[in-house]
Image (cartoon, rainbow, N blue to C red):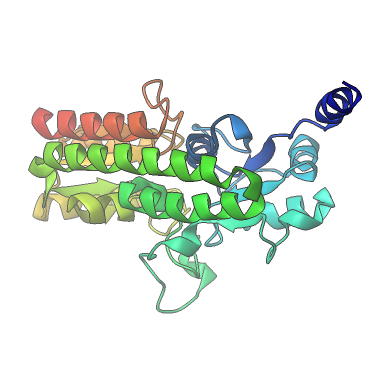
Length: 299
């Protein structure tokens, strides 16, 4: 009886295993971490679906979140270069610094597009490590999920089997969804489009869309009236089917061009939360394809 009491005392005296606090820079990675981690993780996203991830302020509230994080999950490829280094420096959290196991950059695990031949900041918001907007291709989501599941197992080895099971389930559902999306998107292949910002390279690569013009004269530079007139003249020579922009983009340039070129302007969610319908990763691509196909049928 005494031994039984000692065992019970020891059992109930053990500290409950705390969930992993995951600090994600963008909503897509917070949602992916939640898919893989289930009730073993608690996720927080530093940005929302209607925010430009390039332009975030390292606020005290974000620093406090980073200070208590067990794992940092961001895009990388210099997407967050304007605010993440300051955030990490101010956090005082040694384990999430670059080079540590708890520092995870999603773009390290995919093939980057738009690698610049030369670096010239006069060309606008050029990313030396390539285009960082990797989340618009679901194949990249799958690659990042594989790597992130491995990182979760490394950081929290006691729950490795749990993460393995969650990862296997997510990957199976994701592959099924990709097969469905690719069948739905078949009519889009080869369609000429205009983009507002160079943030759709991966989406275009996946679906076979053909970008014939960009509203921004240089990445991150708002288009002038003269540049918009140049784009309009180009479309008279090489027509496009529609214009796409992210939910956080200024709508005026795309609407101006849409009215004059007589083609639809399509707002896409870009990430989880970008539209009311894009409530999770699966819904993000469901809504993106629905909006693209609706625009294709409209024109």
